[in-house]
Length: 247
Ligand SMILES: C[S@@+](CC[C@H](N)C(=O)[O-])C[C@H]1O[C@@H](n2cnc3c(N)ncnc32)[C@H](O)[C@@H]1O
Image (cartoon, rainbow, N blue to C red; front, side, top):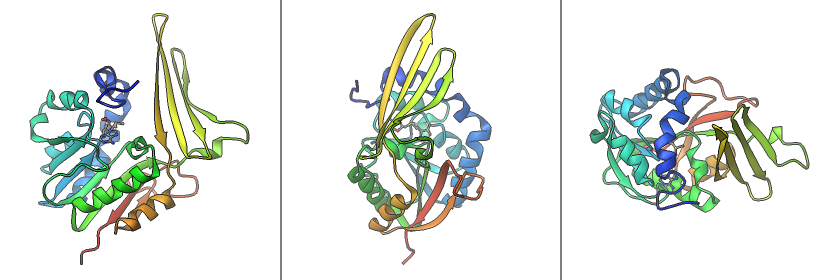
């Protein structure tokens, strides 16, 4: 079930930081912030699509970068606002595929697989157009997203487990005909189970490059991770940077 906050309503927002604890660790956050701060430069502004509770926006702002966010979920924005420095992040409530924020940005970014929250190719294309429209000349759009895990899917199978441990079960279901997928999370606490499922659309690196070209951007860098590890045929995720031509 969704509400006006999408799949990140009150219940999910209340547990978000705790349930993504490893993504809030300094080892996970610092390389992202360093990478984005470098692209923002001395006086550049940064725009986060799906800013959430400020995992990246807050430490990036502490580095002296002016950060604005677009976010669908008011519940997530409330968590951001409650944190120290939360008031310093301008947030527009809306859909990052279409919402417009005033002014030009040096860098727009969309991390933690969140482009897959857009469940149609059209919406993902719109998202690239929207990012490009917010960039000044030479500005960059950065996306962090998984490489679709289809190599783990033998013929006839459509489920890939990503978490199987006592009290926690997580698996993805794939439809390779439509590129739709969904993640399923079962959590058992004191014998009571909760179940959450979230729909996604998985997307290939080359497909993203084409979306970028449609939006007038060109690929500048692609890495396996934020510390600029080489992207190879074994990479399970990528950090890609597309640039708006300077002229
Ligand atoms: C996985 S969380 C990531 C939050 C944050 N970027 C981080 O790294 O912790 C995805 C966020 O994107 C938001 N979101 C998903 N689809 C969206 C859309 N179409 N427009 C705006 N926000 C969206 C969700 O509400 C949620 O806060």
